[in-house]
Length: 399
Image (tube, rainbow, N blue to C red):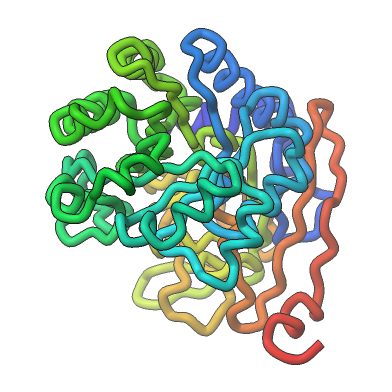
């Protein structure tokens, strides 16, 4: 991703000095960029008639839901708590839920919040579908088109061999009955991860090949997430072509549920250099932020996050490995080149940190949770959280 695009929200500001008043580490959510993403998604919906949902697994900072609500049809949840959050914090909007397997002891409560319930297997449809239908919910089933379109990220590939996610055509033919089919209002597929619309086009062809006899019998088709719609250079016309194809060929209402696209490049993680050490000719700057705790996708994905005034290509005079302060030897963010030497007290700013950060962070090693700040269009900050010792302690024992 183009670094200029990642940090465009800071253009004209004296960054990282503009973050000087903030205690580090901290997350900063850029309200203006968040709204810009919202406008792009709303424009897509207006031109095509699709309905766009926020996948809360990527961004669930509900303080910003009132800002996003005018641009979205609602929220997508992965279970009870996210469903409740969407219903409470984006009231009057749709709440869609998909879970790989629902719990008996939670399902009745889930039905209080959800409008659409998507099941992952025919057996789950059989077990819970009648109750959902009886409560007037729109019922869907996730399918697996068995067409991989990504390489190098098998952990995020729902079409990988042996995947537990979605019903293959073979499983459909083996298990589906006319009675169960009558419960269904729609089909759902989710196969992408940070991809362009050419991958969606390929996937849609596989969906048609596998389920062409079923699609005309449905009311809606949810094309899942992983669409990098708001990324500069994303092929929106091709996406619109895919949406119109589903609407015109099968008469379906189309849903998209992007997570990253809603908050892409709308957040920063501000950190301070605590120390610089050297071993075997490698200089490491130890930061007050941790990859393992505060940006876990850096290790899980893995990837090297963009850094303001630093180059991951290491094509600058001074190279440092940036790492966290935990005891984990692999708590490493990556190697970067700098124009000047780093020293304790220097501020660094990582980009694209609104997604999969605050919703995935943790307190391993007793690491404090970074506070979250709102940055408005004029550059003013509002602190939204006040995390402390009790946030670490209370999740581990009696309260």
